[in-house]
Length: 184
Image (tube, rainbow, N blue to C red; front, top):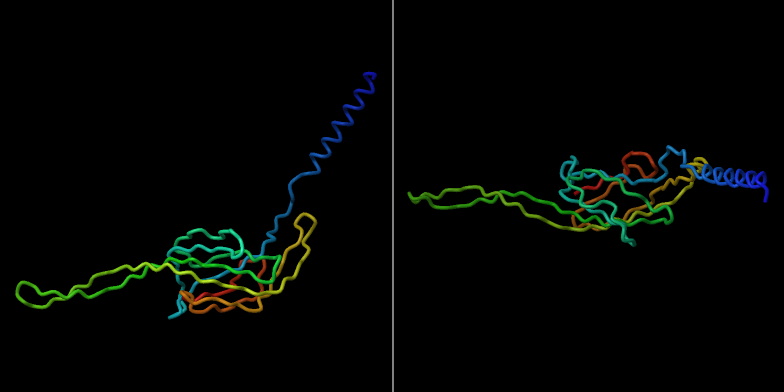
């Protein structure tokens, strides 16, 4: 093979490799395409905000831990399964309850006295939340692909610690708006 043909072949191979590398560049999508369900925690007594002492959220049917031992959570965002019309979560919660217990005793003069003793009781409870919804796809762009909007039809849940769940906004998408209030 002549030197001229070798150079042409080498330049052609180099150009092909360079075009292949450049065509595999990163996506230019600056848009979040994952729909997140937003839960806010509230008191069932006065609707004020509540913080769970320790919270772990599992995606049922998988081995995925969505939130792992989050401390003093008052709101969370969890992904919605876009390949199904139901997503189930297990909420594993640790709650420390402080209580005052009166302690009665008799002093050296024979008079009954009272003192308060503060006791902290730790509860570890689990609740399951099942969310049923309809999916709708939206094409964003070739770089971003498809995003999903989920319209919630209903919820089922256990009531070990959860008292009720209100649907504030049944449309779940990639925005940060509130979807559910969980009352404890």
